[in-house]
Amino acid sequence: MQETEKKGFFGSFGGSFIPPELQEAMDYLTEQFERYKDDPVFREELAYYYREYVGRENPLTFAKHLTDKLGGAKIYLKREDLNHTGSHKINNVLGQILLAKRMGARRVIAETGAGQHGVATATVCAMFGMECVIYMGEEDTRRQALNVFRMELLGAKVVPVSKGQGRLKDAVDEALNDLVANYRTTFYLLGSAVGPHPFPTMVKHFQSIISEESKQQILAREGRLPDAVIACVGGGSNAIGSFAHYIDEPSVRLIGVEPDQAPTLTEGVPGVIHGFKCLVLLDEEGEPRKTYSIAAGLDYPGIGPEHSHLKESGRAEYVTVTNEEVLEAFQELSRTEGIIPALESAHAVAYALKLAPTMEHDRILLINISGRGDKDVEQVFHMLNK
Image 1 (cartoon, helix red, strand yellow):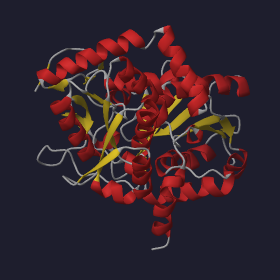
Image 2 (image 1 turned 180 degrees about the vertical axis):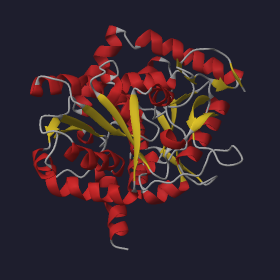
Image 3 (image 1 turned 60 degrees about the vertical axis):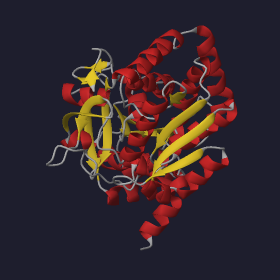
């Protein structure tokens, strides 16, 4: 494998470290993405599906009861949980499936951890009549059995991956192996802001609708920008979408929240994983370290290259929370606001519960609720009732 082109970098991170034959496919994908991303007809079609199928724009909800209880900053929730299929993942898959359609693809593959990207991919493949294969770690198929059934109900073939830990990293490995073997006939609909160029740039482009909306909404509500934007971080798609339109606003703190058992941005070192350079958790042999999170979607030893750059440059800050803090936040938001967040999103809530009380009453926190917790309720029930 070699880095064939010096493009798709964020500082020293990113790029494309893949076999030459696969690079041809990535170059073609880059060409098509650049061709269509600003094309008026493409943008109009994407806006139509965002509005009529996803239900965008979704609300920016003022969490009054939580704000009052914590006694500090005003807390607003960007409600990606209200999207069709239940998370932010549908934003990106719609953009990519419309691109795949223009490229003449009939077979789509994807990886998934918590299952939300898999469900969103299966959904759009059903809508556009495309064959759909989803790779999912065997351990995650057990943790997220309901989402496996949802994907199969939508017509997708779910392939459990038993190699390694049977988790998200291993699912990505198998999806990339499939792509290497079938790149001439297959579109890899990657779900996070990771992978070789152009995936991190493409995923950010489609997920930036989150911050595009929230920026307009908070200005309309408060007449100013938030003091901080908080999002959970696994691979980094919801976080980079939440941050995108605030990156050039230095007054806004950007805070990514990781599991303390998968602290890529806290403890990672520069390395190459899955065809791109980023901060990676490595073991003593220099191999990707075993990670764990109660939220399957955050269980990844690497991170999006732009997050790596934001960390290294100091523009964004990244923190960790414990499983216990996440479970408490999951329950707190449910009890206080009547909103059951995904376990992934509960990581962002958990840090906000600590940060908000330290801030003045006129300060503003914006939390991205990246998904709803329906998929996690049974898992949390068992964890709380051991």
